Image 1 (cartoon, rainbow, N blue to C red):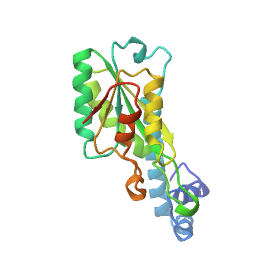
Image 2 (cartoon, helix red, strand yellow):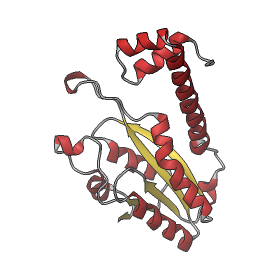
Image 3 (tube, rainbow, N blue to C red):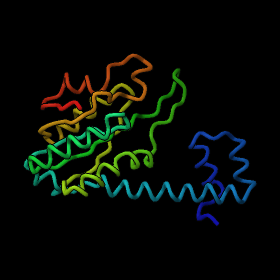
Image 4 (tube, helix red, strand yellow):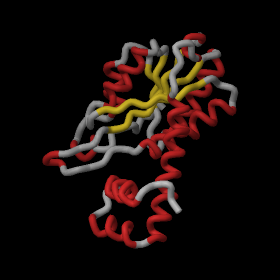
Length: 202
């Protein structure tokens, strides 16, 4: 049996965008409650792993870095190449890599309700990158930021300034989830135009 109450599971499935019919089914069917409880437990576990990945210490690795590399991570086709480029730079410069992912905030109003990324989705995106960097002997840490749609580039630039990045590594196809739909500039292009440090576009 799940450690969560029926109402907690109902709130959980409604938060995933389910309708009232599915919520009623969760209340009525023990097997569905069990499966929803298992899913919620797994997501809670992933959130805890993510919290460990993005935990910041005032005396963390950035304070010891000879070169600070900001890797802007997303799910684009160039993501693998971006990781390899940041890895090569870090190995050659004895630098550290901050893997940043900016989650777009929830939309509402006339655009309709569109949920942003969940913590589990964000963890699934940056965890393999951090794992590869650590596996290759490169010091790295993960960081998450949240930004409204259209302001992802600004969050990347703000993080670069905050950590005094020596270089930003970003994919050429990096774009907001909704920028193509609305004809907004690509995130990568905005970062290149406004960055206060060199930008490597992969």
